[in-house]
Length: 156
Image: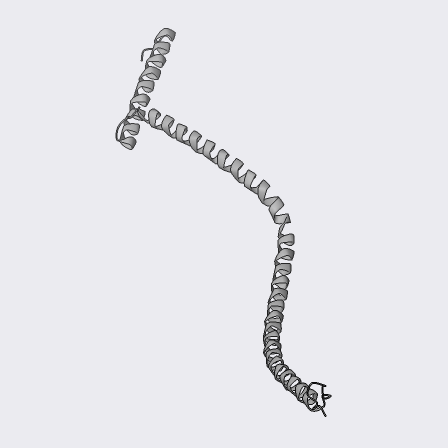
C-alpha cells in the first residue's frame, strides 16, 4: 500500500467535505420538495400579509380595549347610583299608592257631594213649598185680623 502525502490527504478531506456538503444540500432540497410539493418562495408575501392583518387586528383590539375601559369608567359612577335609584323607585311606588288612595277619597267625596247636592235640592223644594205655605198663611191671617179701615166703615 502506498502512503498518502499530507497534501493528498488534505485534498482528499476537502473533496469529501465538499461532496458531503453538496449531497446534504441536494438531499435537503429533495426532502423539502417532497414535503411541500414545491419549493414556493412566494410564502414570504403571504407571511407579510398575515403580519399586516395581525397588526390591524392588534390595533382593533387596542381600540376596543380603550373603548371598554371608557365604558367601565362611565359605568362605575352609575353603579353608585343604583342605591339612589332603588330609593327613588320605592318612593315612587309609595307616592303612587298615596295618589291612588287620594283619588279613591276624592271619588268618595264626589259621590257624597252629589248625594248632598241632591238632598239640598230636595230640601230646597220643600223649603220653597213651606215658604209659599207660610206666605199664604200670613196673608190669610192679615186678612182675618186686619183692622177695619175707615174707608170700609159705613157712615152713620
